[in-house]
Structures are given as structure tokens and as C-alpha cells.
Length: 354
Image (cartoon, rainbow, N blue to C red; front, side):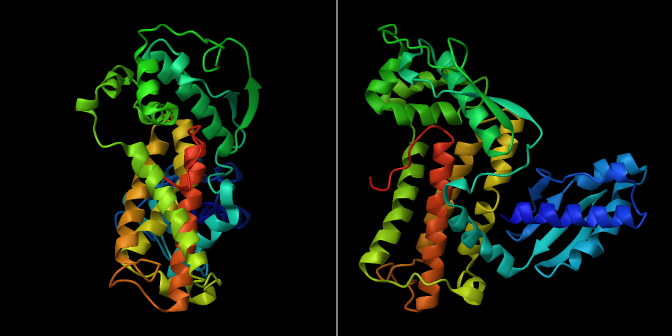
């Protein structure tokens, strides 16, 4: 993924600076997890690492960022590197590099959410709980959050040990929850996956608000349905393409030119952040950030499909160019993989058909 590639290039530059006597060895830090989006566009990435390096090196962060920038700007797939503000380092990657996100995700498949950002840390891996067995929303939320945080940390490179037994976050075999349990009532009405997803996306401290799930009249548009629909839509796009014998050849060097629309660029940029979002959610113990990211992907995919459909019955925006068709199908496959991997990290199986 692009952020991992940026990590490698930045770390290589820091080692080179240390060898040249421009930095002390103790200031050579792994940048994993420090990248953030930049409002200028989907091909822009920023890191705050110069602040920590400057602290260790006893130099102003802006000076550190300015010293690193020329080294990164020399990397072929990086179009620009420049200091920003008091010490941020902003990177603009090339169109080819941004388009390669789709190819990298498809190649990684179910492992597209994985990284080494949290390597060297540890986490507890707990069994997925049964929401219907929890007597209260708070307990159901806590058990889901504990289990999910461990999965996120594992995906981000943390070492994990499986903890079993009757402790927080592990299904304890409660087969007869209280008949008046609001969680049981919600599971009976909406289904276990929908309730699990709602638990997963709930912000810490707001579990009591989940009582609204049992009231149809107060029910809001279901974000779980939107994410599952987006996954099923991307998967069905690939099935229909196969039925129509639409080309699935790799577009090669033409990939960037074929995925140049604003909607496609925005979607590619969003997809590139999956490993960072997963690691950040684990580190901050905010598992709700991952489902909300999946909702962003689902909305971006809907906009992209409308503006740049891959199939011939996509309306006036459809294309007959086989290279563009192949590129758009590759992007659909990347969306399918990201949503499937993200849902798996919430304890839910993605559905190819709805």
C-alpha cells in the first residue's frame, strides 16, 4: 500500500541522513502511522514525524522537514516533497502511484488491511462475543469493542495471544439472557450482523443510545445496509463483467490515465488509507473508526459508479474502451476487497448478494 511505501522511502532517507552525519542515530524513527491526508487532494500525504525527530536531534522540526524533502522528491514515483507549517512534511505522489493502489489492494486480497505499524506492541485476541447473550447495551458494546480492538491490533502488526475463559470480551456461554434484554430484542428484529455492526460503530461512552435500535419509528438509515450493499454491488459488477466477457486484462501503464476522473481519484485516495485507519483505531482504542471509514468507502464507490461506470449499461458515462473497462473493474475489485476486509475486522462476513 502507498503508506507502507512512503514509510520505506522516508525511513531510508533518515538512515541516509544519519550515515551522512546529518542526524543522530537515535533520531532515525520508523514513520509508521504518522501519515495524514492533506486537503489539497487524494494524492497528497503529510507526516508529523519531523516534530519527534527534531526533539531528539535538538533541531527545529521545520528544519528537519526541509532537509528530508529533497531526498524524497528524488524518488521517481513522488512528484513533490515540501515542508509545511512548523514542521510537517507534505508529499505528493504521482498519478501512476495513486492508481497503483487498486492493483496493490487486489493483489493483497484479504490481507489489504494489514501493516507493520504496531509491530513491537502486544494485544489480547478475544473470541467474538454473541451480542444476544449480553443483558445490557453497555456490556454488549464493551465485549464487541474488546474483541474488535484485538483484531485491529493484530492486523496492524501487534503480537497477540488468545485469551479464553469467562472474562471481559469473551463469549461466556450465556444461553439464557434475560427475557427483557434490549440487545436480545434488537437481534431478534434486525439480525445479529446488523446489531454487531451498530455496536462496532458506536462511539465510546454512547452505548446507552443504542436503545433506539428496537424502535422502528426512530430508526435512521442503516449504515450497515449501505456498506453491505456497496460490497455486493462491487462484487456483482465483477460477476456481470464476467458474464458479458468484459475485459479483465491488466491495463498496465495505462491504468492512471484510465482512472483519472475526480470520483475515481477520490476513491483511490480513500482506499489507500485502510491500513493506517486500522492501526489508528487499534492504537486509540476507537474501533468505531473502522466501520465509519467503510461507510466513507461505500459512499465514494456509489459516486464513482455513477460518474465512471465499468459496465456498458451504466448510462451515458459508460465507456466502450476495453482498457478503461479493465481499469474500472480493477477498481471495483479493490473496493470489494477493502469492504470485505473491513467487515471481517468487525466480526461480520461480507455478502456478495443482497
